Length: 386
Image (spheres, rainbow, N blue to C red):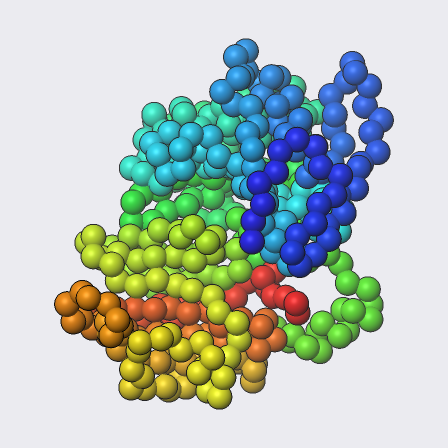
């Protein structure tokens, strides 16, 4: 579910929730910068003011229409400059609390490519605008010093060396923490500048939302009883790359091309240009209720429970391996065809979802499928009782 928003918002309704965006009290006068927390409805104005502060000609860097999607306790904001995935595309991602609309974390990055000095030069104005928007109390010299400290000032080799792992290139200025994170795939890499404006943020990854809003003592006790931390830490297998979505993380072989589908949080895979599979998210099911999700025009030759691949040992989470043969519907005039598919689902009853990996049985080795499925980790912030 997503919405296109523009202008200032006081509140809006989705199909599932009513989100109230509170106006923050403002004590800033016209002579001073707005250094208050950033709220969702003020983000376009805050960004545009930062662009004017950083650049002499800021028209091409002004905030455009943006997209908001519901992540449970959080709202995800995305804004694009340039055509998505084009050579000059840039994306800003932010996470706002649903209870008051306050933005706790934002990051900006370009297209994944053979990243060089030209790509860094293209991103530098956006990096500096993000710094100004998140920390407007800084002077121009202080912004420049921060860019230099984070190795964002032009030396790609130094940037690569310093940013090798999450958390290795981080600086805190005032109440804002800045991290540089690598986003990589088979197409190449890019560098995201992350601004975390909540000093208490405990998100388990710097490109994810912060932890959910604090529970009351009673809510915390109930949450702890329902959701003990039993999931092992994510470990990237040798020869694999990380794929991160809002709700989960997994790994695929280095040589695979991974593309995010139009429905955010789902991905398609290619091997040397040949489609190899995709992910999908269904409602929760078990062996008895799978029949409600089984595709039409398919023959099923196997349904196995493979909890030996689980990273999460709660009793209400299971892995299912399902073997399907898709055939041409009788009414179609096309020549006869069939497609062998192996599906794997991590079905989490508490979360209410089944996270699927659908592979071409003839293209992907069984051992590779098992490695991918066993790498799956559900982000704690993604859990929902809805």
